[in-house]
Amino acid sequence: MGKSTEIARAKARRLRGMIKESDGIALENERLKAEGRKEQAEGRKEQAEGRKEQAEARREEALARASRAASSR
Image (cartoon, rainbow, N blue to C red; front, top):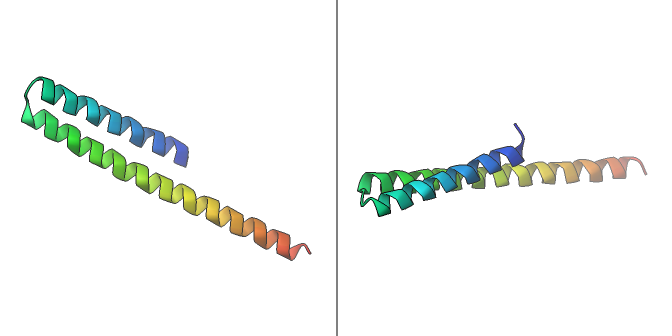
């Protein structure tokens, strides 16, 4: 699975958490609110990890391009 797909899934998880928290607020259900907050936090963590991995991959690709350019001179 690609990094963009992982990040999109993490965003969707955050959104589900927001909806769950909102439902908990509307229903005055503390358990539902807590579950929503937890899901949002997990989604944010997954998103950050995905962005970090994406940046590392871009950095490695840039280094590889620079290395190929230097060796072809």
